[in-house]
Length: 131
Image 1: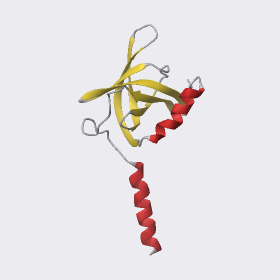
Image 2: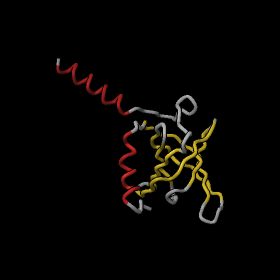
Image 3: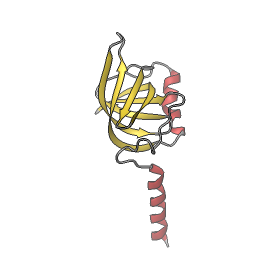
Image 4: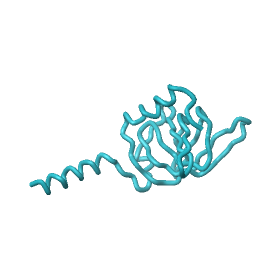
């Protein structure tokens, strides 16, 4: 399932404006299908930011579907903004509901990594070797 129009494709690129932290953690996902039946599954949380996340999932979820991402001490509510199949599964871009923001204080995924720190370490390492 790919974004049907230019606006959704644009969102896929604009999402990078806010810093995304890379992570790897399993979360429960709940949503209603077209018939109103409650569905659930387990997804791998690939990255997260204050206002959204990327999930790797084993099935497509339609665009604009409301989802609830559950973790041990709470949940995040959002909407599917993109759903793209890549070699190992479906990747869902979730935009959190207004007023629903992620905080590491409430939920710290396993293997949380800020890619900006890698760049800083690389620059520092390179400057040591240059001197």
